Length: 342
Figure (cartoon, rainbow, N blue to C red):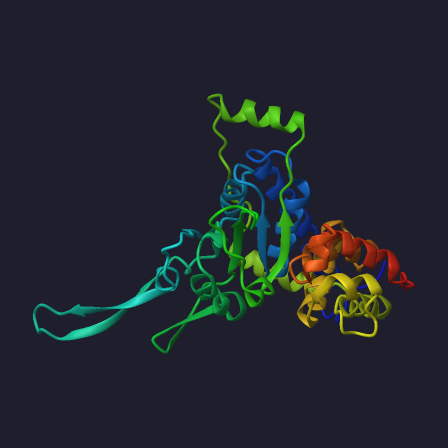
C-alpha cells in the first residue's frame, strides 16, 4: 500500500478519517437511493466533484430527474440549498443580489444596503442554465472560480463549501444558448444523463405514483466535507501517471505536435492545464472512493471523458462526419501509451 503524501499525522487518526470518508459516501448514496433510481455513474461523478470542491454540469433531456437529483443530494449532505430557474429574462443581479437604498424614517438618512441573491448558499442549483443569454450565465464566473461576487465594487465572500450543480438541456433544443467557453471550463465534470432501462423505469413509476414518501436525512456537515476535500488532496499520484495526464491533455490541442491526426482533423480547440488539474483531483477522489490510497491508471481513464468532453471543441468536419467528442476521447486513450505504474 502506498502511504499518503506529506504524512504528518498519526497513522491511526488518518485511517479513521479515511474510514469516515468511506462510511459517509456510502450513507449519502443510501439516502439518495431512497429517491433516485439508476444513474449510478452520474451520482459517482457528482460526489467526486463535491469531494474535490468542484462544480458539475449535468446534461440531459427534460424528465431525467436532474433537478430532483441535486435537491436530494443537498438534503443528504445537510447543506444550505438554493435554486435558480434560468429564464431568458433573468438578470445578473437576480443571481448575485443588489444594493438597495434604505431610509431611516426617524432621521431621513439614506444608506445603501446589500441584499444577497440566491448565490449565497452551499449548493446552488442552476436549473436549465442554458435557457438564459450568456450575459447572465457569466454572472456565475467569479463565484465559481473565486467563491465570491462583486456588486458595485464591493466583494462579498460566499459560504464555504460552495458548489454549483448546473443542469442543461441539449443545445439542439429550441430556446437554448451554448454556454461561454470560459464558463464551461469552470465545471469539473460534464455528466451525461442517459435514459433508464426498462426495469429502472418501472421502479420510477412504482415510487412516484403511489403514496410512498421518502424522507432524506442529512448524514454529514459542511465542516466534514471541507475535511474530506483536504483528505482527497493527500492521496499520492505517481509521477509517471501525472506525466500521462499531461500527455493526454496536450494531445487534445490541434496545434500541438503531440496531437494525433484525428484531433487535428476534428478539433478546433483543446483543453487547458486546468483540465489536467481536474483530472488528477478527480482521479484522487475516485481512488479514495474505491478504498484505494493511491491513484491508478483506471482512475484516470474513468474521469477523462466527463472532464474533457466540454473542453474539446469540435469543428465543422466533425459535425459533417457525425463524430462526437466522446468518440475522439476514446480514440485518444487508446492511442496514448499506457504508463508504467510504480
